[in-house]
Every structure is written in structure tokens, then in C-alpha cells.
Amino acid sequence: MKNHFSVEILKEIKDGHPTYYTPIVNGFSISQYIEAPEEYTEILPKEVARNKLKELKVAIEWLFGKGYVHGDINPGNIMYNERLNKFTLIDFEMAQKTNKLKDLTSSLDDLRDIERELSRIE
Image (cartoon, rainbow, N blue to C red; front, side, top):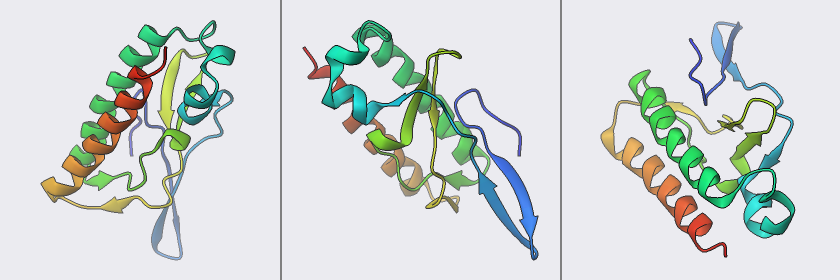
């Protein structure tokens, strides 16, 4: 599977079944950012964080276009890589193959919830 700028998936076939991996991302999660914004806003200003999070919408749609949903979009599974200046989805343990639009809608709803949490940061 090719990579998207915000989704990095390495695919390996083991015993005839695909196994998906994401690389280790050095950085911090949106969860950490929301819990202690004062520690991270110098690295990633709030407005930049909000705009970068919108890029994940494209990544989620790209993933769905490939026939998959992440299955567990939450603040702990979105990492910010300062060196690359991007958010990356991690932890594809719950990912599943699907073509159901309701699965895409659910993923995008989860992302909107995270965006609302970010907008509450003063």
C-alpha cells in the first residue's frame, strides 16, 4: 500500500494474511497537547495545530478510498512529528477493510470531536 503524507503503513504478508504496521513516530500526541498545551504551543501554535489536523481529514478519506478505516481515531492515536512538521495516524490495530460510507462518516465524526477539543484550548 502506498503511503499518504499523514498515513504511513507498511504491509507484510504473514501466513497468507496481511499485517499492517506503522513506524514509530517521535513526537507528542494530540492527547498530550490537549492535556498540557502550555508545554507544546511554542513548538506547535494552536492555529497551526488546528490547520494541520484538517490535513488528517484528507488522510482519512484517502485511507477509505483504499478500502480501509482506521477504527480507533482518538487524540492518543494522532502524533505530531516536529521534525517532519506533520500529524501522523498511528495504531492501526483496529483497522478494517470496508467500503461502507457509515464507517468513513464515523471516522470523520471522531476527527471533528478532536478538532472541538483543540478549539477549547485557550
